[in-house]
Length: 308
Image (cartoon, rainbow, N blue to C red):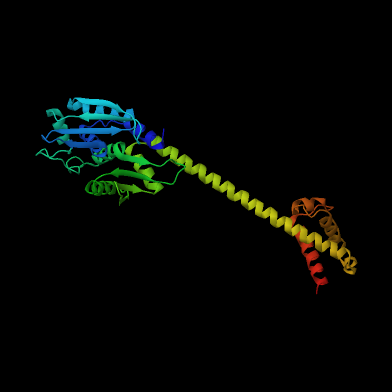
């Protein structure tokens, strides 16, 4: 099951308590997943198509208070795979629900945007958007590049959806494609905010958990790379110091060096791979990094004088 389907299954369990919110959610579901057909005789038919049986059952639950007779069927094959369809006819109850949800005008004409009475309250805006996402929404998995969109077929409906999202302080964009119109966002913050307001809290937690793990993994990689770089620099410095010690030991300047510097030079020539802490531990008595660095600087300065 894809992440989008998991989100929809979570949202399908949410049936608003208030009748006006149930109406708005059903309206969003009809606009998001409905295909409206008008026969030559003026008869209406509405077909809702879903990829999840849970969403089809959700649609039936929202229709139940209207006492609508709906046909439920399973359609297999095609590029979309198995689909679950809820079909409404144009009997009186069916026309009533289409009118009350704003799909049909009072003159029983098809409308391509939800009327303001359906999305007047903020809670109804949330319910309408929840229905729209159940009908035509999709969201990328946490491990993929961020993308959430509503895929629509009408420009006016896409523009209305954009304004409804703005009422919730959610910034989306609209893009026209060859066969549809997308109302989308690529902002992780916006995706999380929308899923949270719709009620998909488990999905938000999964996204945030992945983001935290990704941040920890990136920090661990950064620290590992930093450690490797430090180790390379320390090894290169140890080789330079060992080479300088061997040059001094073979020159007349060796006897002029203080005994403490000669001791460190002999240890470095023998152990070029040791870190400063490890090398300081071999001096008698042991030296800290600061004192050891002082003697190594004296060593390098004396080696540099050989080339002067």
